[in-house]
Amino acid sequence: MGLLDNQKLKIQQEYTKIWDVVQKLYDLSGNNWDEVGQFLGHHDFDTKLQLYRVDSHLKINLVNFDFEPIRNLINTLSMMWLEQDDEELKNLRFKLYSYYWNSFDLDIFEPLKNIGFNNDNPLQKTIPKISKAPKPITPLNGSSIIPTQKRDQAVKDSIGCGQPSVQQLEPNIENLNTEIMRLKGVVMDKTKNIEKLQERIAELEVKEMQFHSSRNAINNDEINLINNDLIFVAALVKMLSNEKRAYTQSKILEMIEDANNGITGLSKSRTEKVMAVANKLYKPLIKNKMK
Image 1: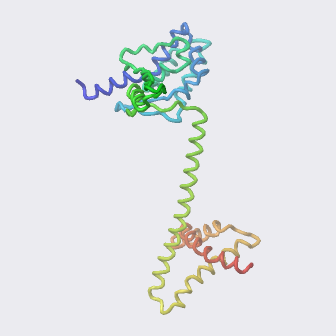
Image 2: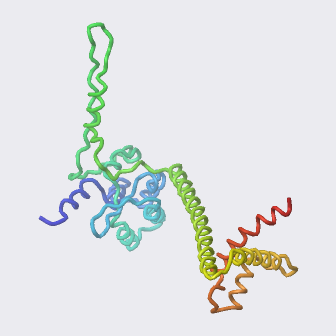
Image 3: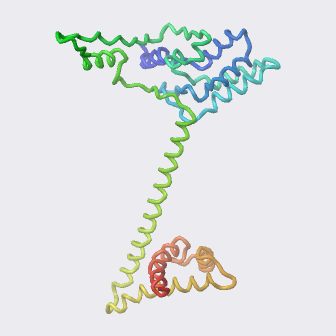
């Protein structure tokens, strides 16, 4: 017995190769490739059936938000109304070699049921039917009581409720748009948190500078000069940015870096952190002055 025979059997029982489905549709169409492509495109096989990919380690992976493999299949087959391109078909089959659909999804997919498509997989596990709920129990007083607990348990047992499965809900454009909006919101929240953390890091780094500068200070007045220096820097940059040949703060810091290349503490990334704290001290003073 091979080391991964059980996994291989699981794949054969629960999944069907994309090309096997395509080949059966080709036979049903009367050997017409472009009709197969039209059928797949018309019924949105690229979005309405969950796609799976088996990797080189025989792991079954969900393929989410990547519709290109099936869309490429649809477009290529749809263009074969002029002549059959055997080389193109061979390349297409090779590209889809590791892609699968869930066999049960195929069995219940309405467009396939309507054309009498038979997956015909002898290894496929039999899907248990849901047993009917037990008949109501009629007590002596004539009222009808349904044994809810037993009924629910019977239904759960019959469909294998609680068993792990990789099957997901059928995707549609509405669900995809909702997921995209949710992810965008997550990214925005993360971006805001990053900006807050960067500001906090800048404050701590300046405090570190102040600590090292104040270790040898003689008195508190000398320590307070550090904040005054920062306010002076902020005011100076503000004044320069208001000149006729005005530069933005970013441009000024960039020019400082270029003019003092190699001098520690004057890189743009460093001066931006200093300016973040300087502006925080300077802006409230300006607001108070304007009141």
